[in-house]
Length: 383
Image 1 (tube, rainbow, N blue to C red):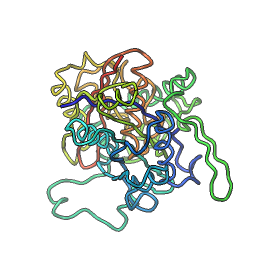
Image 2: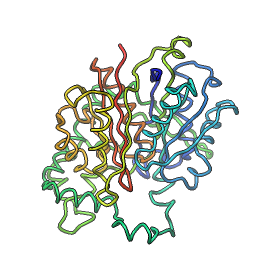
Image 3: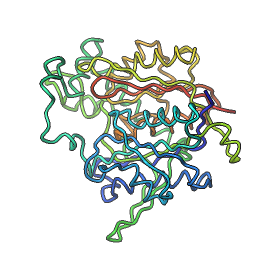
Image 4: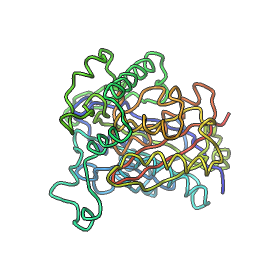
């Protein structure tokens, strides 16, 4: 197997639902980072052999293979194909895996992995309207909303609401500090976009982090999924709009093109887990990817674990023996936002830049996914 390297990784700022990107089409939003990786590397787009895009709600502006549409909007040659995949919240992390597998096997040399979700213009579950679960599925498994699953996890692992709210507060504080210190400056492309009616949209930073939030404010929020529960809008991920793109190559191709490999994809895993208690998948996915890499949690310098709900990374950390000081050091989806199909790529972009900022070696990423699944990835920074 050949070394698979990342040579460029960029994301848009994440806008709040009904925020700055409300007037930007989903396919046009995705086209922006697709174009930016070409601008930054100066490669000929004809070198790209596929564009693999993660997107969950594939309806409306995200239907009809949004990956192909966005590549054409971005100005890629017609010979560059595009495909759109759905592995729920890990969709664009899976896009990275598929890209890496194509390159490692020798089938391709240059692939773009990307993700998009516009939760304002294409609301969550809009692709499920009028559709119910098959009785042949629901007879076997109790099919729940993820928020209810999160409540059950809280009960099983005996977490308190105070622990969840404290974690949520820390997510906001870390994200705010990261922006103040310029940690996101390189990974986030500023957006200036003129809508068809001539309205200029400008966004240079994530809209989600709340500088004025307090523990008291978080504790005062009503629970959403259970009257006497623990999950609130404050300790769950924010709905948001965003996109990200990653340019992967074989190490040999990168060197041939005169591009600096920034990290290599060291190991990948994907697992199925309990479809009812569906948010526990990152635990076995982490165990599996560490085994494949022949590494331990102590070897990892940074972890990016998606903050779908506060109990997910907290329980993950307890079960795998993680050092909380290494977890989501620049905040996570509770503060930054969770544009479903884009989050896998967003976490990867952030993790790579954090390893570079701190001159560290190994990063581990994991995301829980609907129906009980999870992806995990280990990358190694290249000096």
